Image 1 (cartoon, rainbow, N blue to C red):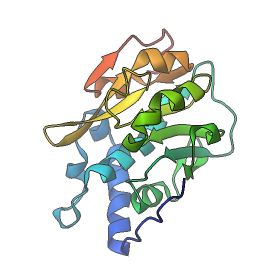
Image 2: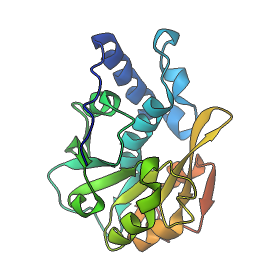
Image 3: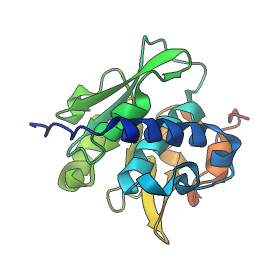
Length: 203
């Protein structure tokens, strides 16, 4: 699938994106404070700016059950139409999770997820969603999407718009099947959670 090159953003925009990610890294994120508190009104983030920041920060609250998988980078992959554009690249620049540099990859299909830690599946993949998730069924990739009924179809984290704010819901049954563990801090700020965490949930 041919990807449309992201639109270049100004240096001011890139600086504000850095402020966004710092805001999410603080306890304010754990308390559920929305992204709009972390950025000035002169550059109000849109829906996908918020989702990009969430994607990066999900990586700080997930681990492989039984210990971390060895890898040389922390790869966030995007499947389908890329609505985040340069924002997610700006946010990931010079970032590290578990001492591994964060890389953003656009992939053409679900068979190309080797090395991905988090996979965002665009809503335009809706018609292929069951097939995509079936391909990923034996992997340990954290799947995230804003496609409708994503959790019901076996996805792990679904973005929602609630009173014009970006929130997320979690399907722990799918997370557990992938032998992943989500932090209880992350689960506390989810709008809803299906299933129960394993006994060795992160503190």
